[in-house]
Length: 219
Picture 1: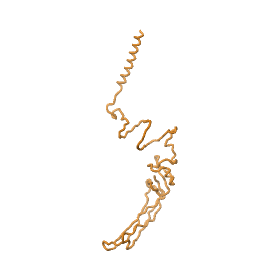
Picture 2: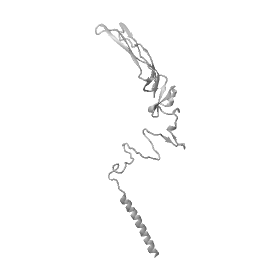
Picture 3: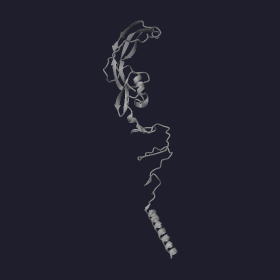
Picture 4: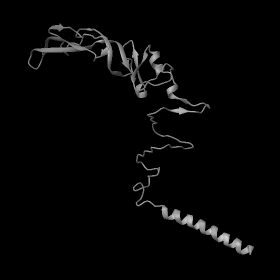
C-alpha cells in the first residue's frame, strides 16, 4: 500500500514539473529575425561599428586604446572613498585648459589666471603678449599702438637712385575685448636703375606692423 502511495506521489510531482515546463516553452517567443532586428538587441562585439548601450555596463577590467570621453562626472574609489572630478577645485594645479594642450600649472607659471568659458572648460588670462606655442582664444586681447615705419631693404642690385619717400602709419589699439589684433602697412616710394630700359624705374617697398598685445586669453 505504501509503495503504491509513493508511486502515485512521484507521478503527480512529475506531472506538475512537466506542466510548468510546457507552459514556459509555450510562453517564450524567440526572435523573428537575426539580431539586432526584431526583439533581440545587438550584442557587444569586436566589430568596427559604433555601439551604444543605454543601460549600466559593468566589467571587471577594461583597457582603452583610444580617447575616453565622458559627458558626466568621472569617479574612482581606488583609495577606498569615492572621489570624482567634480570634487576638484579649479585652483588645484593639475587640470587641463580647453583642448587639453596646456595645464592649469602652465597658465599660472606664465603669471596667468584661469578664466571659465562655461561647460567646465577654462582658458588662461595672461597679462602679456601671446606666448610661443599657445593659441589665442579666439580674439580676446588688449593691445598697444605701434608706430610703423617701413624697414624693407633697398631694391637690389642698384639700391635707391632717387628717394625713397616713406609713409609711416599707426596700428591703433583696443582695450580688453574680443577684437582682432590691429595692423597697418608702411610704404616707401622711390626709383632704382633698370638696365632693361636703361632708365630709372619706380619701386615701392612695404612693411606690415601689428599692435603689441598686452593681455590675452589663450590655451
